[in-house]
Image (cartoon, rainbow, N blue to C red; front, top):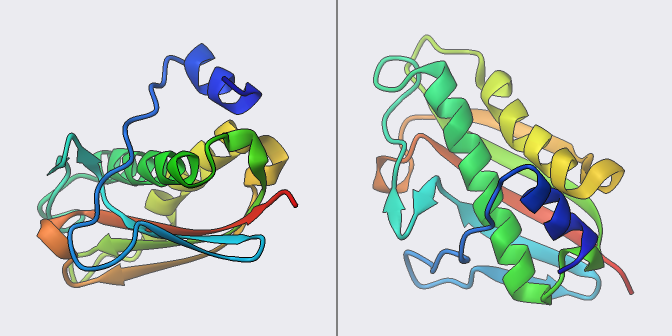
Amino acid sequence: MGKREERLKERGIELPAAPTPMGAYLPWSRAGALLFVSGQLPRLAGTIVHTGRVPTEISLEAAREAARLAALNAVSVIKSAVGDLDKVKSIVRMTCWVASADTFFDQPEIANSASELLVMVFGEAGRHSRMTTGVNVLPGNAAVGVDLVVALED
């Protein structure tokens, strides 16, 4: 177990098994030293656990937890792709989609939860550029989706 997985363990966070794709796509693809992690949802054991639009169907706090779980699932995909989280040079970019009511404009607050998890796992290498946006709906009525671009050690 590498130092980054130890960091998770020390904080009582168990890395889940990498989620399987919900359609005809790969969970990740690689181009040279870049790893592209497909969009991850707040799923546990194959079930989306945080659903609905923020804040009318799901609270801001529950949506933050959804973002954190989606990011944790993305981390598990990284591990399945490269075998060791210590092979990550940096998280280059994160995109976060938030299923939002028409008058909700605080998507960055939700995305912060995913960003904070990445920094907790990867330290300074977890700091990233980011795009956050509100959308009408997400697959499976998920509240949040997260994808990543990751730079790997040579």
